Image (tube, rainbow, N blue to C red; front, top):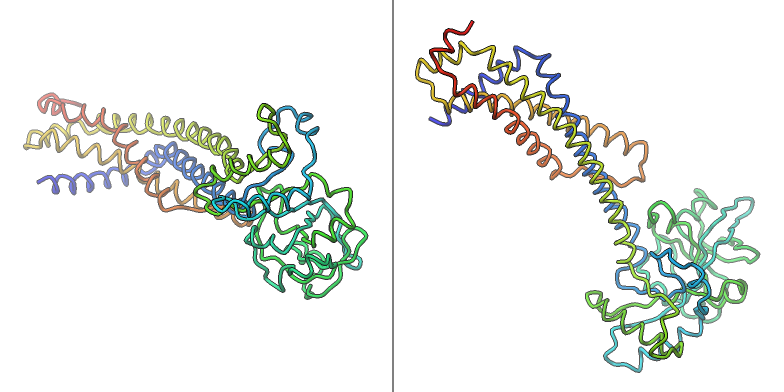
Length: 415
């Protein structure tokens, strides 16, 4: 019986919507705007997550960074600025402490001083290239692969040969379609032979590109870039990333020992990790969510008021029809279901139109900004249709209930 009532309700709803197309279209506008807003909000938040995960891959989730400045704090710049330098010699002492502790949570420390340099090849030039000096062990920490060639080997690392590995953007910018292998480029005033090209890694939040970098042997870096040797970033690989908090505390103790700090003295260095940057992105996601929910809520509220109003009007126009049906034995439940289905149908149509528009905008953004990470998730489709259905039920219940409670005698007298 209930299935028959549902089928009959859908049939009548379809007839009414078809008979009042313009009114139905105008009624759904609020729902359409709301669904577009909630869908794009979800897509944007998911895009931020995807982009951030790609950006963070270059930092490594099992690597700790000993540096002068913390990544996320803007307080007391001069206090951080006046901290003692992070010297390259600390790396050997730190590795010795790790080796002397069989139960250490740490595995390996590698120096990676860096500076921004201009790189040239012939008449082509790229400025603001992130240039890092490091050892052959750097590849083990960074987890980056080479599309072409190879990374620096141990002999080149120890000998300080003038060889380099370049990022994809540097290779494309300097060589274009030309094969970069074994070509000689200039990093500031020195010539370096290209022995490898990193696989494409993307950028960090659109601020720093992992593909705009050059890596050279540490001994070559310290020889030609003396002014940039101090305050080196020391990268420390953790044995088990699930125990990174324990490893961080061990590293803090080891570095305090290297620095000769007394128990009552504060740390004069920072230990950074991927998690700190990940926490900084949460306010951005929260802001997107709040703005999206506000727009969505406002649009759906307006849409719900419109649907409620149109359902009241529809019930009023069909008062005699309702009276006739009730006189012939229709139950209150049947009338209630009929008007609820009509309200929900209008909302679902609006939701479907909103999804189509949102997908079109999603495709447009993807075409205009191909590097912006976006993902149209199936969960968003289900969520949007569910919100549409709930909006229809809430907005249509009051007029449907009123229609269901009409007295058949009075309804038949209605003119």
